[in-house]
Image 1: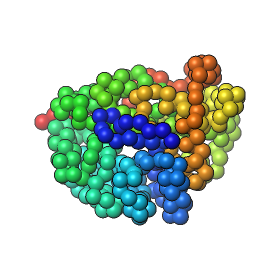
Image 2: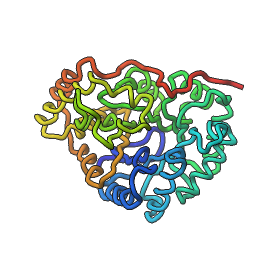
Image 3: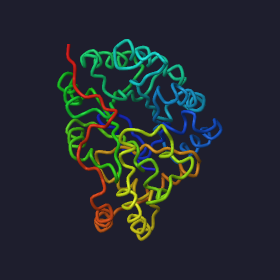
Length: 332
């Protein structure tokens, strides 16, 4: 396993991270989560990504039981705040009250005194951005959080925060990024690079599309992620016939390179210096180990050109506001 420095922090994170979005928020049994997590440690993964809203605390609680048996210095832990945490629609957002409430609840579920990274899971335009920034800075000052990040903020929102608090406010961004969703390359990556902010990308395998298991013109596999009613926003936008056909064109490219399609897709992401880690999910230990094979992968210029030819015009390359994104910036 190779490691990269996370933005302006002193953290060295594994190029592959283990995430807990769909699988560990109620999708698999506790013994499976345990097995996958231990497989991650065995493979050299040290970065674990979760969120308070995943199963409304279920994913955090599951990892709290498992990770607490490991020395705290042996892993880097990230969680998030923003999503609705109860049936009360007011129980969400990035107000100071909500941030203070949710960080304490997350730490209790995770059985730790601090998290290494605390993300704004999305932007909250209903709260003055100055209030959100001050609340995040306070939890850092209190020692509950080491570094701050954001996920799926617009360029304007990121710049507004930097203008107020400076480039050292954030160490990490978490965008969707894959062969089929290349939009961050246009504006986000240049902005984060200019401000020493790393990217930990989600959905690097396009929710399983880049494993080749979804076929053009065929029904969705039973139990697959795209067959789930939890899929929404940009995840759904990548599922279309053009992308399915592009993926099938990538299969022989990967085979000729002597690697699996998933390994090729992960190596393609990690070719970018702006990316510190790719967040992968796993419901079986062997999937964890398969994802870490990327650390041995090398991509030649000829191979990258073959990938581009196979993808054609399929990928999303222009910045888009996802259906779930909150636009605008409110000031005091």
